[in-house]
Amino acid sequence: MRILIITDSLGLPSRYVNMDDMWVYKIIKEFKQHEFITIQRGGLSTRDLYYKTIKHMNVDLIITQIGIVDCCRRPCFKIISDTLFELLKNYKILKVIKRNMYKLTRLYDYKYVNKSGFDINVGKINKLAKKVYFIKIAGPGISLKNKIFNVENDIKDYNNILKKFNLIDPYKNKKDYLIVEDGHHLNKKGQNLVYNEVKKKLFS
Image (tube, rainbow, N blue to C red; front, side, top):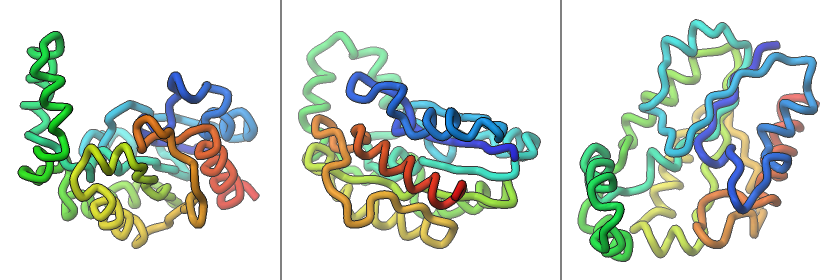
């Protein structure tokens, strides 16, 4: 079976979680009888995917872990924020923007992908293979709630869209699965929760 795994930074290693503990790595390592293709990138949203290219991969199964980048509020349009970051990354003004992120996201409700766009994009992904599974958007932890206005409700709204499709929920009735420092990425326990749920749902 040819399997495509799509993740944002939640599926990538960091200074907090080693490669050996990542759910994607563990799944690929354990189920060597299958052919795996991965699309993984920090900051990946549903609008960044090349749907036609994925269709031509002719995969049998898709597992996705994206959505948080789509639904988090931003202080300005992406092209502006990217340009500002490049221009101001060595200056104190960038720290001022980050320090006031909650206020800015409260004033300016802009998302990289709005709810209707997310619904459309997820529907497109769902048609790219015979079986497609969407991992529930995790969080948020305290750090993210303190940084982004209304993020908890926004995540719920986007998860409600995912519920219309094949949803994998590794976090049900679970606690302490996020990295405390950012309130968003999965710690070792969180990675293991996803690994176990994906394994149980798809490979049992």
